[in-house]
Image 1 (tube, one colour):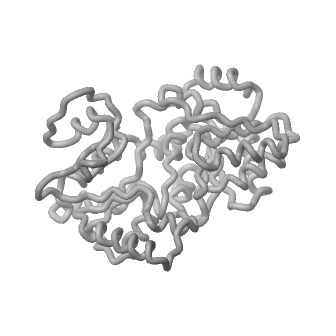
Image 2 (cartoon, rainbow, N blue to C red; image 1 turned 45 degrees about the horizontal axis):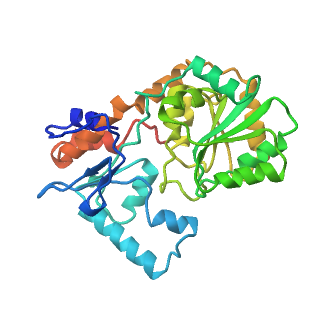
Image 3 (spheres, rainbow, N blue to C red; image 1 turned 135 degrees about the horizontal axis):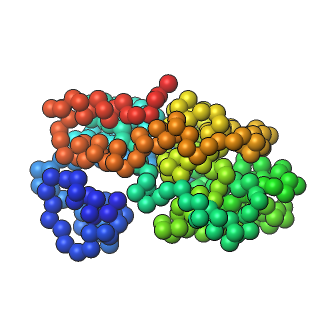
Length: 340
C-alpha cells in the first residue's frame, strides 16, 4: 500500500510529498518514525490494533522465550493490556482470532481481515517466465519454488530432503528465492550434499516479482507446526493471483487448508512436516497433473483476497464503530475463507 491508496480510502486526509511512496509500517511513538511510516496520534481517536505476528506467543512457540519466565509474563500482560484497550483488533485468520479471544478479549471487538495480494502489481507473465527460466538455466525443468522469508518458524527440512531424494531426477529443480536467517541453511545443505538441483537467489524487486513467481511450476508454502494462529504466511495470495499450483507443508488445521476444498486437489497439494516421501509424492503428482492456469475455482478464491475486495473491509473497521453497524462486524468475523 502507498500513501495514494490510503488517501483514496479514508474520509479526510492532509498529505504532502510523493503520494506513490510505499507505507512500510505504523508507528505510535514519534521517536521511532522512519521514511514510509504512518504515524498515528489522534486525541480522542479510536485505537485499532492490527495484529500481524502475535507476540510473545511466537517467541514462546519458537523456543526463544521461556513461557514461565518473568519476561514472558510481562510481555503477555502488555499484549493483553493492548488488546483490551483496543476499540477494534484486526487479525488475519480464524485461528489467530481464536487465540486472541482465549486471552479473555471481547469477541465483538475482534475482526478478521486477511492480507490482500499484490494483484495491482503482480500477475502471470508468459514472457517473464520465459526470461527468468532462461537466465537461471531452468528451461525444460519442473521448477519447485520457495519464494519469501526463510524463517526458522517455518522449517524447510522436509522440502530440502525431498530435493535430496529427487536429486537423481534431472527433470526437477528446486529454487529458493528470498532471504532470512535460514537461507544460509539451504545453501549449506546443498553444498554438504553436492546438490545441483538447488538454486538460491536473493529477494527479487517488486517490478520483477511477476517474472520469478510465474517461472515456477509448483510453489511451496510452509507453516511451522506450532504456528497456526500465531503467524500467517501470506505468500499464498500472490501465488493464487499468479495461478501456479502450490504444495503446502504444515499442520492440517490452518488458514491455508481452509482453502483446500475450494482450490481442489489438482491445485493445492499438501504434506506434513517430516513426511519426506509424502512431499516427494505430491511433487511428482503435481508434475504429472495438467492444471490450467485459468482454473475457475482458483480465480474465484483469488478474487476474495484481492486488494479491492479486502481494503474496503479494513477501512470500514478503521473508520466506523462496529457496535453501531452490525453488518461490518458480521462480514469481518466470518470472512470469505470457508472455515470447515
